[in-house]
Structures are given as structure tokens and as C-alpha cells.
Length: 312
Image 1: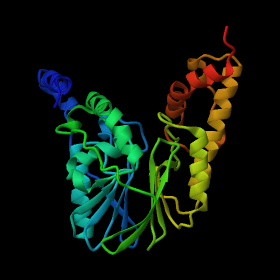
Image 2: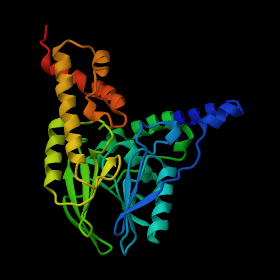
Image 3: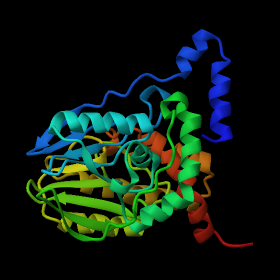
Image 4: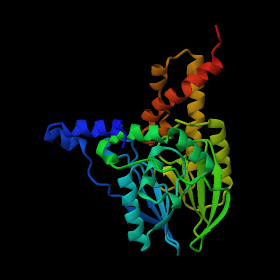
């Protein structure tokens, strides 16, 4: 634990008991929903990272194999990762023996602290991203989540995942190395059931987030996903996609977002004004839409202004 985290927890201990009760966390209680033979989905909250939800906002997946459970995305904190590990043991009858981290963002990656680093795997780009940003993410999560993060430290995944087939415990996966939501977006297809684990390349009924987005590469990744034959799709956020609409919905939001912000720059709107632009009625059912629009303004607007506005 670094001095910043010690000071946060020390300050919390100095609070009156009533205030402390609001500062210290409860316990994670993830639930597993069976979605295919030997595959379970663990739903995150369709909300921003908040103390109230402990940062448990990303979806995870559990896959049963003869060699032990596979966990795709281990959550946001040590305790979250432990809870997911216990849940995997409960539903599969075997301990977690392989962990995949889909990309660098803390709601998906920092729960790796609950596992032996030798079983935590990711794309080389994801390891590089976490080497650069992991400690900063960790400090940010300690500030937001306080005691939910107790004991969490950054565990770097092995950057050893390559695109192609992988066999583990008698179960065959196809792994895809993509990018767009981040510099390294891992996608896993369970060949036995046709279940596609898409990570944050796909959001479903929840507005996409863009802190490290390259929209051109993201669209190209969505093209690739569309071409992958699959049945069910498990998005990084939002409910299971049973009817094949989540990829198109994600693309629709990204297309609208880029066109809207490009026009806002051309119209001379400042960032505050751009963040208050109307959201089309077709996105009314997307959770966190206003929140993610405003975040995307902060992520994308400076680059759009640099590209589109004349230099004086």
C-alpha cells in the first residue's frame, strides 16, 4: 500500500462512527447466470463506478473445464476477484485455473490481484497498457471506492496471448486480438457453445465508454466481430445479447457520437455545451447515456478541435 492509500484509510478511520459507516465497504455478492453449457455470466451494474456499487460494473464470465474454471475479467479489486473466484468454484466445482483480462480498464483488470500472476493472461498490448497506467488506475479506484479496494495491488497479466486457437482443460477457445476500445481488446469464442465474450468492444443497452478509444479501429473491430459466427454474445457491460443486436447498437452510438461532436466543434460549441446536446430517442433505453456523452466530450473533443479548427 502506498502513502496515498494509507492516508485515505487513515483519514477514514478518524471520522465519526456514523460517517465511517458510509465510507467502509460491504461485501461483494456477485451472482452467476447460466447462459450455455458450462458457461456462466456475472452481471455488473449498469452504472458508473460508484462507492455504492463497489465498482462492480463490468461483466465477467466463468467457463467450466476439466482442468479448472476459466474466469474472463476478474473485476475491480482484490475482494471482487476473490468473490468471483469463490463463485466460480461454487458453480463449476473447481477452482479458477486460468484468468483472462480483456483490456486495461480497472473495472475489468484490477481483480487479478486475487490470483497467482502465473495464471493471469492478456494480450501483450494490455500488459504494456497496465505497466503504464495500472498504478494510476489503482490510486483512482482507492479514491473512489475507499475500503472496497483494501489490499488491492496491481498484478500485471502475462502478455502472452496470441490470436488463434487455445485448448485448456479439454475446452477449445478461439482468441482474437483486436483494438479500438483500447490498444488491446481480447475477445474469446467458446467453440463448444458458440458463446462470444466480447469485452468492452460491445456494450448492450448501456452507452459505450471511450477513455482510450480509437473510433476508426473500434469500427473495424466491430466489422470483425460481425463476421465471427457465434450464438450468444456476452458484452463488457449490459445484458446478454441473445438476438444479435448489440454490435449494431454499439456501432450506432459511436457513429452518432462522432458525427455529433464533429458538428459541435464546427458550430463553435464549448465542451459544456457539447455535453448537454440532445440524445436521440433511439438511445433512450441506454443506461448512463448522458454520463458517457459528457465523458466522451472530455476524451474526444480536444482532438477534434485540434483537427478541425484553424490555427491562428
